[in-house]
Image 1: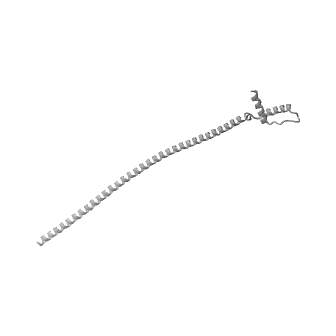
Image 2: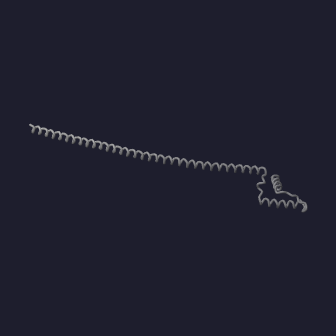
Image 3: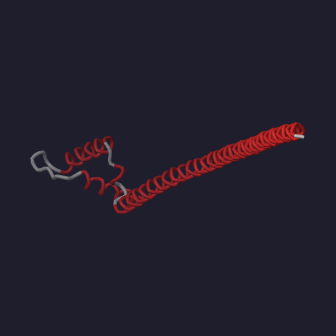
Length: 170
């Protein structure tokens, strides 16, 4: 009986030890499954984060490209507007200068016309007419006055006398 009890106790101890070993194996398997599940979950999170980073990078690159295109288009527009404004300003300045020159010429022409109206023969005085008038004066003075008493006549007076003579003959 004691032998049987010993056998039962030995069998019970073997069973306890076997049960304990099985529980240890189950615990190790559970730890291994938990660790694999955790690593799988972490890997999936890492992949999701990488995909999100790729999406963000792509979005940022697209935004930068779009902003650059908009900037270049805006720059080209501003450049063309600036060139057009500069051309307009130059044309306006040129037109204003031409108008000032035309006004100056008109004023000078009006002044010249006024002077001609006041003394029609004054504008005709040049070297040829001066020489001709001197010759006429000398002949007239030589005819009318003696060589000792010469009457002094200026070119203006001579021209005025000639113009009166022309007006009288007409």
